[in-house]
Length: 288
Image 1 (spheres, rainbow, N blue to C red):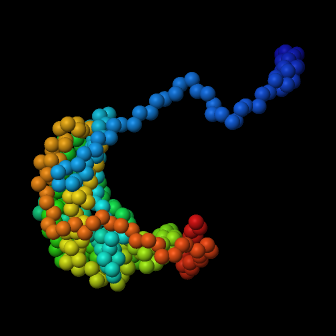
Image 2 (cartoon, rainbow, N blue to C red; image 1 turned 135 degrees about the horizontal axis):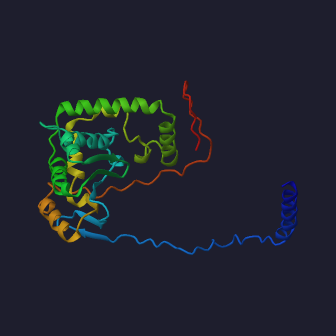
Image 3 (cartoon, rainbow, N blue to C red; image 1 turned 135 degrees about the vertical axis):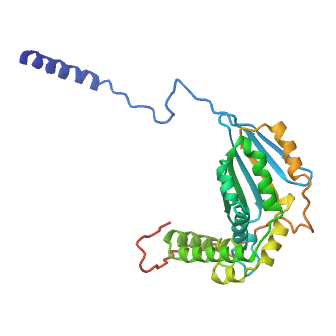
């Protein structure tokens, strides 16, 4: 047995030098060859516009019986009125309360039907997103239509949302990441530029926002010509476009539009330098 083992090692060591001399450096200037290339085909995007100006985009994906709906509005926190920073974010939160409230809590009704609702607002857009089973699509669209086109606001809801946002502002001031992100926007655009303001506003601006301000924003921004619908999933374009026409075709906004949200020019170019923000007691540091 020992003799065989020694013979095996001798044979191995005699082979290694032969292979070592044949090593070839791979060509790293070109991608490696592959015998099987998976083809990726983008789904077909169908775009349409209703007579009242609502933009519609549809994508058919029939692998699973689910649908994703986005109801978007041109207009984010950069369009907040002077001195009312956070007004568009507050309106979005208030509309979410309208959607998720009612005698029989609409949130429970949505969840019982397998519907997931998300609301988000940034500096340029506000959107309401729903993921739902295919058979709940028309019901969910009608629900969104009632809440977003003809909402019923209350003082109690306003106070509750204002308090929630005030708490969020206090938490953001103690969060190194959120402090850093806001500082970056302000360094790039300036503190007085709409993009340099906090999306959530501040204590003074939140306290100044009243229902009349939110109703005015809703009247000016939640209009057919500023609205878009994106639907993807297990849907049929030919049958869905008439549904949109029936639900939204008769929607007419009151008054005249104030034009699209245009970003004002930046007064001065950002200056190079180092910015240090001291947060005493913080256990984290953010660098960017």
